[in-house]
Image 1: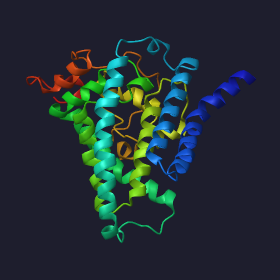
Image 2 (image 1 turned 30 degrees about the vertical axis):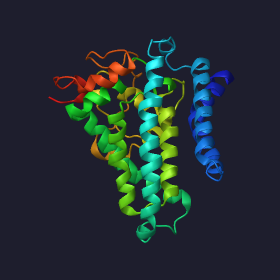
Image 3 (image 1 turned 45 degrees about the horizontal axis):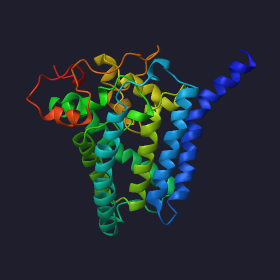
Length: 296
């Protein structure tokens, strides 16, 4: 191996953990600020711009770089569907309820643990709900009709990270956050879990050439998520984890092929192109369960 190749390989393996660790460190500072929510959004925007730049400097799939005609639709989903639901539910209801419930439940939550250990516990608990919501969205046809909008993209990029129907987003939050409520997680843990979910979510979708090694045994990485967007059931109905793949490992839905993930991704069913048309599409007359849903 030449020196140039060795450096390139080192960068490829170090890029994901370096970016993720930087986000964690910066978020720790952000949470101490007076306008933490505003600063978090600036941090997230900075991450998005960084990954967008890397996608064009060091793309994993060059065929995913050209405009697919869905940029405005993807951004509309991000701001008006996923973003709006998360602000209304996660920020308004979740943080408010967490502050209201945590005093009564404080004896349940291990507040004596170091903060990092509490964050990991919060991630694992939330992941149980996120995994269940994601798997149900694939295997139950009524919810798949909403989740299919996310999978209808024909390329993976930071731009379509937030391409979710509002019903799909709400279902994930509703099934994951109550688990943290029940065990009495402090509001700080809710904020950390939400922040890490946002970081890993956009990292997972980025079209950047990276290598992951053992990280793909623990985290939901771009490598695993590219398989998840495959049109083939045996590849696509796998890797449901949002942040961690612990439940994929436990329930046998983990998949990591020893060959390159498919370039041709998406769904087999028709999907309208426009934002409003996609929002209405799942409510139209009953359709046969799609191939990606895994419903026989």
